[in-house]
Length: 111
Length: 113
Image 1 (tube, chains in turn green, yellow):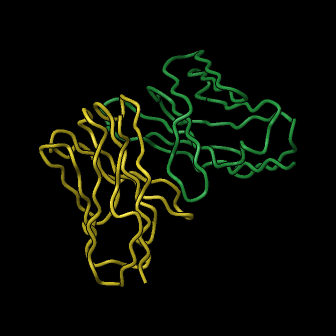
Image 2 (cartoon, rainbow over the protein chains, first blue to last red):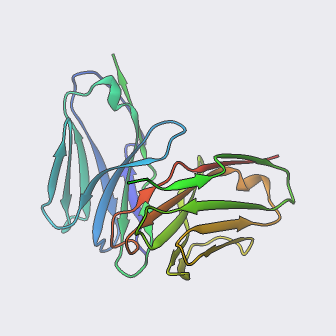
């Protein structure tokens, strides 16, 4: 069964710095999702990555997918405090009708 | 377009009781999935329904059950509540399941005392 691992679990970074969150998955995942969750809130969709080499960007966040390496990354550029949240990646296998989530990365951006 | 709605938003129950949570999907979405989120186990899949049929179920005891109605609204029920059932229960809807993007509701925070 698909397994999704995320690292790091916790990330404390200074404003203005760049960093990357990694998401590895164990078997074929037909698509890869990134979500953001603020404390006590639900999941907000950030990116949907469908194919090898897919790259999507929104503001200071950029996500990419390498299906051969079974790796997706979420890159944060010039972090700002508003990006503080927990970020999850999730994979899915066609026909299983479920997402498998990573453990989440709790990001704290320090002013 | 209205998003996914879940009721109630907060619940406090005692051990041994049962609880029913409700989820109304985005209009036009026929798939509803349920997830449990806890600090220790993270986000875990409970079950998925499409057109009133359960298509997949996660590794949860039989105390956890669900159903979907003809209007795509879904309910999940937990019987004989245990302390470990305290969690945020998230409902997600999509056009057709995991092959489509899932949109999450605000969740129901269940506390079992």
